[in-house]
Length: 175
Image 1 (spheres, helix red, strand yellow):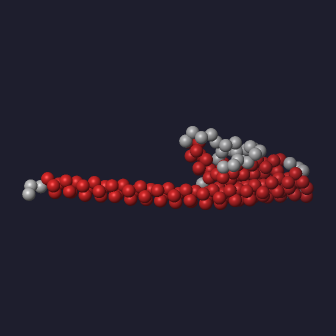
Image 2 (cartoon, helix red, strand yellow; image 1 turned 90 degrees about the vertical axis):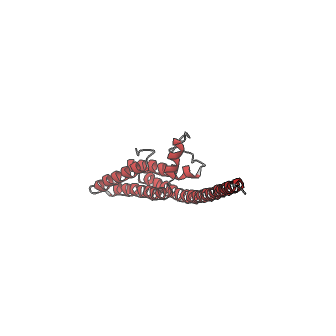
Image 3 (cartoon, helix red, strand yellow; image 1 turned 135 degrees about the vertical axis):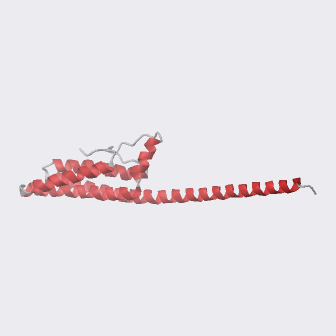
């Protein structure tokens, strides 16, 4: 079973499984080769999702939430989450689970159904990651604007205080 909660560990697991499948194809009959091919396609979909997750840092956002005391979502739940950051990560782990099942079956039809599911999950993850990325960019831009406004307000307050101090100093000078 693929490890849950660590994208890098899943990538390593996926590479190890692919290497094992590549070696088993050498002596396999046509039917087994077709099933192995399907499993490799599911693992390829998993890899595509992983690349999107790397670009968006959605896993890091979920990790940060857990550090803040929020519970980590069930990444293997049958029902997809509604949170956009969770959806991309959930798709990744569901795809990993499906790819794992595809590597364990000799039923070619079942393996190819797994590929179809993995492909749909890859599309969901891509869309979710794009949406998350856009949302994060907007959030960061808003935070930058708020920081700039706060800095400007603080700078103006400091300038006013400095001007008031100068006026007070001038008033204290003997005439």
